[in-house]
Image 1: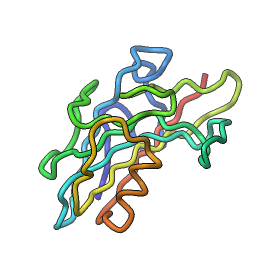
Image 2: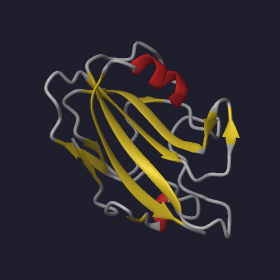
Image 3: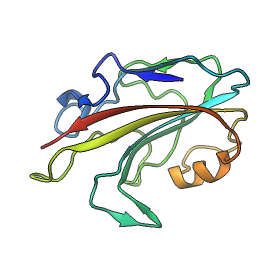
Image 4: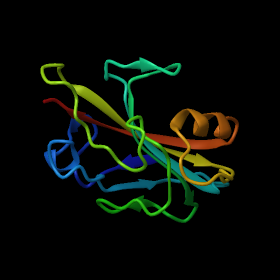
Length: 150
């Protein structure tokens, strides 16, 4: 699988409009080369460079979307039309990059998982819950890394 954005290239700076300093809107994403047997997708964004360790995890989860139908191949800017999961800010939906000042460049991993199943849950699962449920059901994965520094 491949994951891309019209807003930034892999390992390039995320434009301010998609951050907590800008409009805080989710970037456009699209994926290709989906494996046979895909039933749904999960998309999430994780900052492993955030200086946070809690709940058995590290970093900060900015976005979780799941139960994306098998025939969908991306999102437009600001689009969050499927089942929203809980980010590490405790809310549903996207929270743009906003690393601590003078903390250096953070890497934001946008990841799409292709699943051979659908997560049978309503809104509000966090990333840890989702990853536990999809163990053994991932048939493909792609990532796009964006960077940001304040």
